[in-house]
Image (cartoon, rainbow, N blue to C red; front, side, top):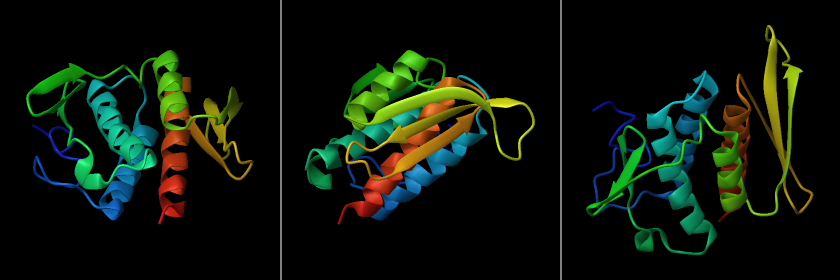
Length: 166
């Protein structure tokens, strides 16, 4: 099992322990680096994204961290908690799955997607922008596929949301 598989929010927490908000923020940063370095579909990355966004969504809904089920990703696109295991959606390989995730974790955010020449990069990349429904900020992701660009923008938005949450 690699570090990316079987860890808890990338923090090395053990099953049954609750990560702190700073650990969640660190995990989102690590996950963003993995998404930005990806070149296509990656089932282990799909599971890590599912895992991190489940926890983050619980915080958004006002649940205390100790009341959120502790899920872990076990590789091959699967996540589990206390004997329940399921395959995560193929976020990194499917624009539909990535868009459904963004709609779930960032309800009301506006999505803009297009193919552009990225600053300082060779060739065209996909650019995804997410705009807050409050009209505040915009988060942008660049990647070789539309799904990865959208996931990068989503992770940046989640980081900003976490930074704004006391």
